[in-house]
Image (cartoon, rainbow, N blue to C red; front, side):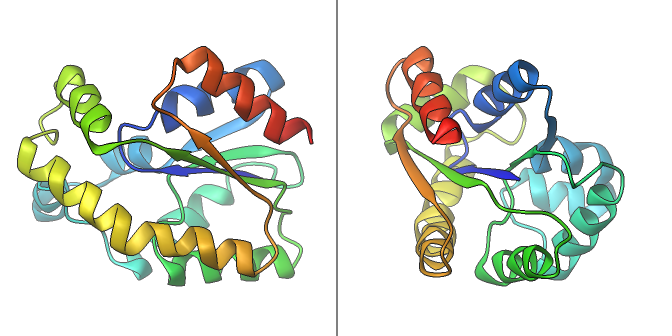
Length: 177
């Protein structure tokens, strides 16, 4: 398993799709999954930038991971987003459900993220929601990177403000280490 993480707008989906396509890996995007599966009031909250609870996310990811051959390499895009989710994932690794090859952490400045997200023109990409996502990324997601590093995961920090081809080259260097 290759975990792709970073703030919304850092290019996780683009890089995840390219990596999966080039190597024949399954690509699991939590953003895509949630946009398909979450409905009603939870969907409205999600569109406002609110994250689902750890239990909800773990339940969804557990079911999704049952659908693929986890003995083969796959790209996990956008999960985990909290330390409890990371602990669940590491527990699955320790149980032998799958292995963790690398964590690719795409870093991006708030200005670049805002421009990218506003240009893609999705309903949930408002200035307010983007600011909230960036704040949650700094307070909730960044500690996960340190946690995964502390637990022995190989983490590659990649500057995602640069040209996507350069980002992709750096992703490949990380995966091929």
